[in-house]
Length: 186
Image (cartoon, rainbow, N blue to C red; front, side, top):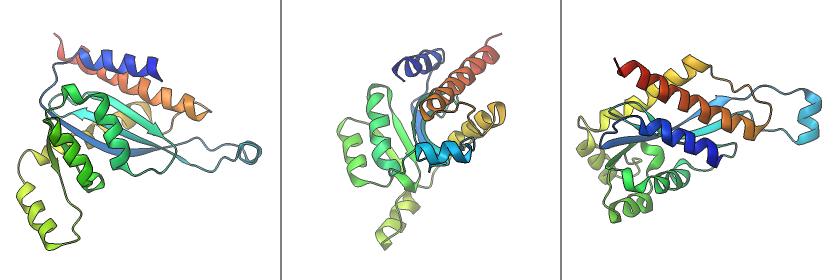
């Protein structure tokens, strides 16, 4: 995966990145394996969980983390953000990344966070009302990037193994970044 992440990094470096990035997760369906294959390999998961960091100005995938386990998004989000901590300005995220330790860690390194709170208390509702501004609504661009990726290349990875599917997803994001660069140059 290191080689594929380097390819993704190089394709992201083709673009002039802005100061606002968004993080979010989506799932891609796996190809349904034969019953024999499923029984032989304990094949029980049906989705590949993808957590991506996307630049809100250009729509470029900066990095992607793929997993077949159901780990909470905020824990994986910290690992993903840590890989790119030097290039971050403002991070936008939904309620799935509402983790006080994540906010604290990002603030200590000088990254501004715009993360919605899970509304357990009235103070959380008030904090969410303060967050509503034009910056937070740029988070929808990551949803658009995921939609464009799935529409262009399909929602189902074609590789048979889980590590092959991870590589395929990262390769698709790299190709999308390169296609965005070729459209922007005259």
